[in-house]
Image (cartoon, rainbow, N blue to C red):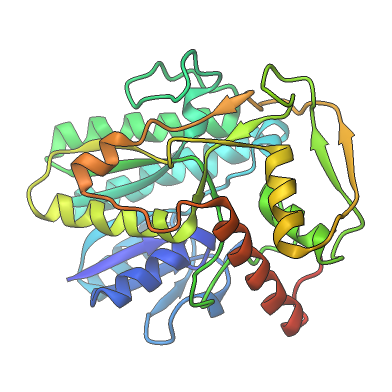
Length: 332
């Protein structure tokens, strides 16, 4: 039994691959390396370099590795970019996901885990936001993921596929054993940007909007450690294998931190008071996005271990220093 991880050389995917290997699972990775890195996955895990939107390649990989479950990460994730390039997001996130689902059905694969996002909620009416809240995404990124969720549910109903949709909130940090981390040089994640500023890899960082209806005027997000998120996928796979019904779950801690609070945490843990400037709001940014995460804990038995902003920041700092020592981190 082999688990196919699409996008398994990327930030979150590579953490999951390590967790699966640690759990004794057989894993194969399909990644086109557009944003992933081959060095991020264990040496004993086969990597097929290619596109998950290629149905013939998918069939070859599934047959060659005797795949029995698919965990689908591959996709594009930058909200502002999705507003500028919507058709790219509908191709890469929605059309290609359809191809992966079709391959699962064709090969009678019974278990499918889909990497989704809290962006499907848009501007939530109530915070924390629960899984049964109205989904009103405000960006092509969020809409492309919601369309994929709907396709997966329809295919599952028609073909007996069991799935777990995991809606991520803001993922940050790095593997505590420093085997992998957020390695993309041109960062879009707030904590990585702040860490790069603290380490002198960028001259400053920007805060996009200080006039939101929040206590300090900046956006509030639920930051989840990437290892806790990866372990949630392992829990979801175990749940499905044990006969669990298809499920949609939030992945967050249930409380948020503002942009200013993140900056303070990076200041505190780096010992550097780096330059920060304010800028106008960006399109597609809700004021606050915090998960109601009780369902994941109850259904999966998920027990996060790194639910602490300072720990997340320290792991992000440590990983960034490793990248600096390798001479591979050049931000812009």
